[in-house]
Amino acid sequence: MTQNLGAPLPVFHDRHCDLSIIRGKRVAVIGYGSQGRTHALNLRDSGVSDIVVGLKADSATRQKAAADGFEVRTAGEAADGADVVAVMVSDEAHRDLWREELAPAMKPGAALIFAHGLSVRFGLVEPRTDLDVILASPKGIGPRIRELFEAGEGVFCLFGVHQDATGGAHALGLSYAAALGCGRKGILETTFAAECESDLFGEQVVLCGGTVELVDAAFMKLVEAGYPAEVAWFECFYELKLVVDLMHRLGPAGAFARISNTAEFGAYLTGPRVIGEASRAAMDTVLAEVRSGAFVKRLMADHDAGAPELLARRRALGQREIEAVGARLAEIGSRARDD
Ligand SMILES: NC(=O)c1ccc[n+]([C@@H]2O[C@H](COP(=O)([O-])OP(=O)(O)OC[C@H]3O[C@@H](n4cnc5c(N)ncnc54)[C@H](OP(=O)(O)O)[C@@H]3O)[C@@H](O)[C@H]2O)c1
Image (cartoon, rainbow, N blue to C red; front, side, top):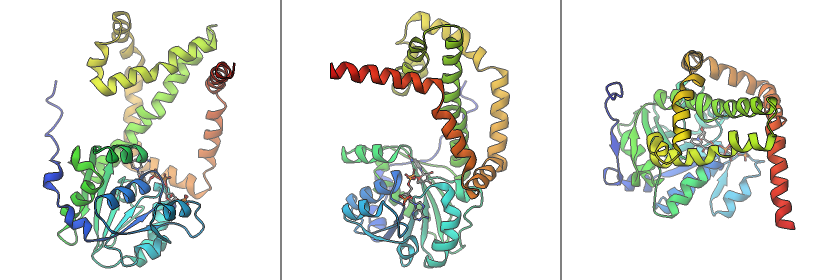
């Protein structure tokens, strides 16, 4: 069954990384959200002393970065003179940020670091040829990466070099990833395209799009068949976390060893019927849209128009029946505490 897996990726740990490289650099962290704050704090705790945070002049986040003890400038000012510019802003903002602030300001031979390959893979950012261009994508949400770092642990990191203008991009990127704490766990070398395309596919098909629709469709099916909404909510939504936590810890087979035989037997019969040929064909379409750039084109068109589609769909999601049942149960739970 493993013949299609391909060769294992090259893996690096702390012993393969030279922290002194990043410690000697002036690093501009652009953005201070989920990833940016964690990158800045972990870099500083790893001995990088010259860090500047880049934010918009009117950003509400400026206060937070300043309270954490960082010098805060605009993105262009932060990038000016920096050896390393870590682009930690939302992906739709990369194109304009690059053109308007970073490209004119970055010094020759500096390095651009991304936590997601999207903007480079799809040409939203076309880096100058004199720059090193590196991917350091820790596999975790920012606050959790920080929490683990403080506990002496780390998360896996997908790492790649898109452009090695100086000959030092690989060593610099490893040094940066190690400073995030990822050398404690494993830094896996891949490409911007592999990271980005599989990330978009995974979040659309499984993590976000697929899961939300599967849960909602099953919940509504039970409600429409006359089952109490609360019961449907527990069975199709609430217990998902229990099973996902088990799978995360033990893998699918390990998790199935812990559930009842009834659940396991039913899963074997029904899983392949729910995720059958139609679902696989839909996955082919999604992957084709991701690879061709059609998805990113649509994302950016919506962004440029002020995000009408994103906002309308977000509103509609919040109005689904499953949300009302969740709110009803949350209210019951809080009432019990007040009694
Ligand atoms: N979230 C994750 O767990 C995760 C995981 C892996 C990779 N990534 C990648 O990490 C990158 C950052 O994502 P994120 O989730 O950390 O973003 P985020 O939490 O939304 O934070 C974005 C930050 O960028 C700032 N910003 C936005 N536009 C800017 C501009 N033009 N100039 C300067 N600052 C600007 C925002 O400031 P304001 O407060 O002023 O808006 C905010 O501080 C993305 O490439 C993402 O794909 C994220």
